[in-house]
Image (cartoon, rainbow, N blue to C red; front, side, top):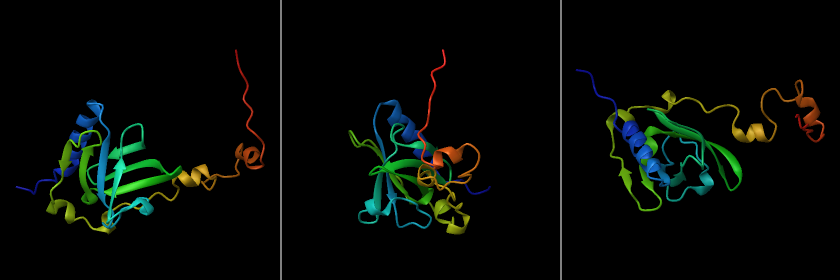
Length: 155
């Protein structure tokens, strides 16, 4: 019989769905010291960060078997957040504390940083600040010269 996969990603998705279905705000507790963690480190306290992962607070949320990944704004600045599943400590509701603390799982600890996918070369802040790929091509030339966008009403 082969080794079973880790429970954490399945429990994380289940608790997340349960919290959202009950109109609660899910908060993810992350061990920011784990290898591969890409979080805004200026908000890390005592090696941990608490992230609001409510649908209204994040974009492109992915609760995958090996990671939690999303785009969000911190102090108005866009960030791409990448959390390896091994770094997920707990998920709870802001309103009442309902949720779960995850136990250590050897299956997750066996993952090495080399197995963690690289961060995207172009994050949301690059796109917003105009450093993304394709800058200065085609129609983008007009916007980069300082002209204001022009919209027409079509009836």
